[in-house]
Image 1: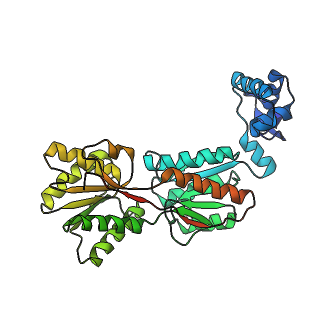
Image 2 (image 1 turned 135 degrees about the vertical axis):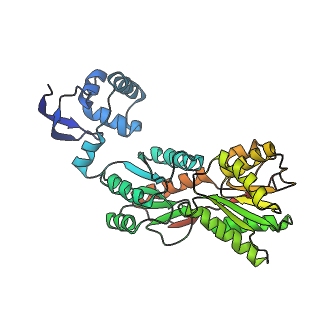
Image 3 (image 1 turned 90 degrees about the horizontal axis):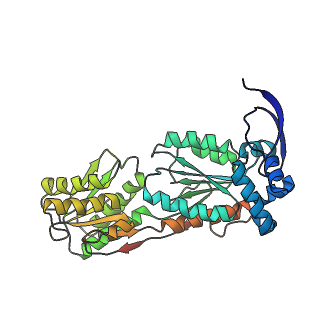
Amino acid sequence: MQIMANETVDDSKGQAVTRRRRNSGRATITDVARRAGVARITVSRALNDPGTVSPDLRGRIDAAVSQLGYVPNRHAGSLASATSSMVPLIVPSLSNAVFLEVIRGAQAVLEEGGCELLLGNTNYDIAREQNLMQTLLGWSPVGTIIAGLRHSEGTVNMLRRWGGPCVEIMEYGEPNIDMAVGLSHEAVGNVMARHFLSRGYRRVGFVGTRIEMDYRAGQRLEGFKAALEQAGVGLEFVKRYDVMSDVALGGQAICDVVAEHPRTEAVFFANDDLAVGAILGAQRAGIRIPDDVAVAGFNGLSIGNHVTPRLTTIVSPRLRMGRRAAEMLLARIRGEAPAQKTRDIGFRLLVQEST
């Protein structure tokens, strides 16, 4: 039988909140204070601002927290104060190393600033993004970070009505909901096209997956095509696959390209996963890279340096992008006006043996 009782609980800031709960036996901040032999407010300070208590006290409190398995009740705190220290970060994928590095950069800065990161994954679905945002804003976050500049009308309206600090990441352009930090994907395509042309390649193609959903890949394609046309060179083909990118698909793609477009001289793959897979698949199929077909990618993943030949790619500064977005957000949370509301973080062409 579960017993219902009135309980006065303390949130992570030491505030008392009375509510009915099931007697679950879960440790409270009072239990931690008793175990450590300190006041509840001291525990609250140690958890929220460790620098305000002595190392000895922190050690005792940390030990008590660990022994009791105490988890601060963040939801109670948000109900009591109508705010929290949470910052949602919504990305299209948690399996893609590109977004993991962005997350790592943002998390490091936010934690230093006393904020907690809450992750959301949309799977490249803007309707799912809207539902996630609605849920996460209900927790009264202090700010939010969201991937891309393209959202549903409902998401944009929701964020503008909410009115809190918001940073859009991964691409540079307009319009912006509030602030943005990223790079121009059309410029990426332009740079790669000029690189191919400088190598003397004229019969070139593009390979991507789910371009309608991964629209930033589509932007790179448009920039690539435009630069080729400006030089009087037409794009030979665009090969599209309606599945998620991975290394195995890249291996299949290079064989498909050679079979369907045997005169191809170079291929720009939408990302490094595909491009690395193409290099590995070419080796199995007896296709020489770059002698038979040159291969290039996008992102600058470290795996591109561990294949033979090493991959030519565009390096996006993902860790720095995450850090910069978090820094801009924290500045706004502190009430500071940003020096720049939008920042082009740039990229660089890494030329290696695959082209």
